[in-house]
Image 1 (cartoon, rainbow, N blue to C red):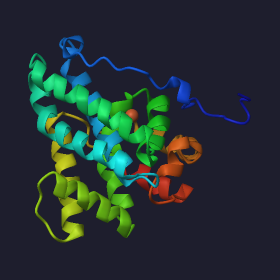
Image 2: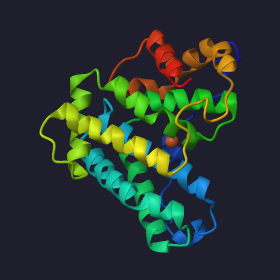
Image 3: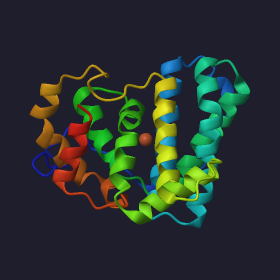
Image 4: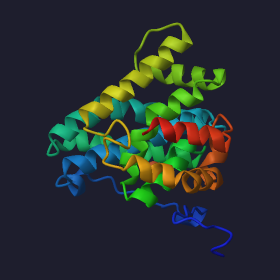
Length: 237
Ligand SMILES: [Fe+2]
């Protein structure tokens, strides 16, 4: 690719030929993964499923996979983080990961991933950690759209929250994500992740420019402006 056409370090690529024909879900392969890898990959899986469910391209097929994946993650991620040798929990997370992958490959992701791609490459933070840091902030941003709020509320009710009011139900989901992050020692924001505030400001145009061009942005339920993304990133510092 011409460097002038894409002046960013991160270049997310996708193609149907990259999709696997077969996935081997054997929890033994993940037994020795350290707890922070479990946390980062687990919250990445959750982000896949939540973004898929609220995406512009969500459909009944992707929804069924996304909703089931979300429940599996909330039930099994913290226990697996605490005890990585629990192979039953590991297996459930692998299934969740595969299901969330099927979900977003049949719908799309959103700006959570777009911003995470830019921040991760510029500040060398793991993909999952970036997504985890961003997730509640992006959900709050998307909540300004009523249809998105209803989609978050659907997830919340599927998890067992019995709130009739969509706004309250959606906020219960956001609070659950915040509590999950805390339990997994995922940083609350970029400052607690050890990133220099001034560096984020310095690279702001790069980060927002890259995220706007990222392929995931088109799938986000709310069409963001570059100013919106700037506001979101500022909330992280
Ligand atoms: Fe991801």
